[in-house]
Amino acid sequence: MVTMKVLIVDDEQRIVSGVRKYFEQAGFDVLAAYDGLTGLSLARSESPDLVVLDLMLPGKDGMDVCRELRRESNVPIIMLTARVDETDKLVGLELGADDYVTKPFSPRELVARARAVLRRAHEMSAPPSKTYRFGEVVFEVEAQRCVIGDRIVPLTPTEFALLQVLVQHPGQVLSRMRLLEAAHLGLYDGVERTVDVHIHNLRRKLERDPAHPRFIQTVFGAGYRFSRDGEA
Image 1: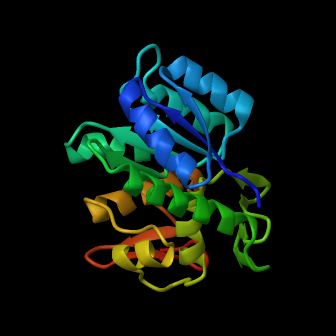
Image 2 (image 1 turned 45 degrees about the horizontal axis):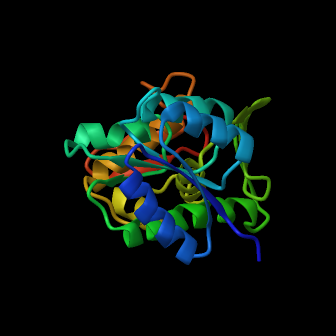
Image 3 (image 1 turned 180 degrees about the horizontal axis):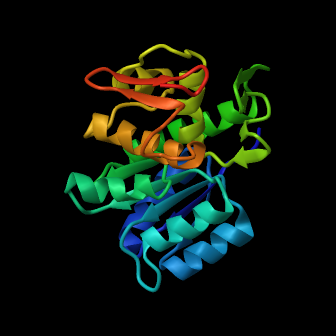
């Protein structure tokens, strides 16, 4: 059995110590960093399976670390934030994080969230063989990739899970709650806003003009649908 490696980046040693204990008890190898620059360096050199990243860090804050990691990797990221405003809590998602946890939090809950994110990443690596074609869009489940023309679209595990649900039900209107459940994303505070942020990120990657999407279309008051031919 392969041991998963998690990198915890937080400047509060008490939090790192407590979280480390729970992750180790759950069978993870744990790396720790107490500032953004060290965390980014460890992420690059150690290739962890998951990064738990605090929003407020000395040297280089969690936003910048998340942004740089997303330029280089699709490693699953869970953001930690002490802020309670919904907009603040969702900033990390807009940068490509897969989930967020608000301080103070239960280390047991964090480990559960980590397992859920890693499960989605694993499902990306070992799904049933299937290819979906919609005009210039090719979604290859087995190869874990989405291709538009000759361009491979980089997707995080959460984005991949959501897009897979949409392309498997082309033309159908899927509510935000159904998308969460079908993609095994669990339940979050501000559930609708959370889905909207991930859809926004997907559109930025998929659409020529995200403000006028051809593929992932909004059905106001109902949810989202994936267009078969990229036409409204």
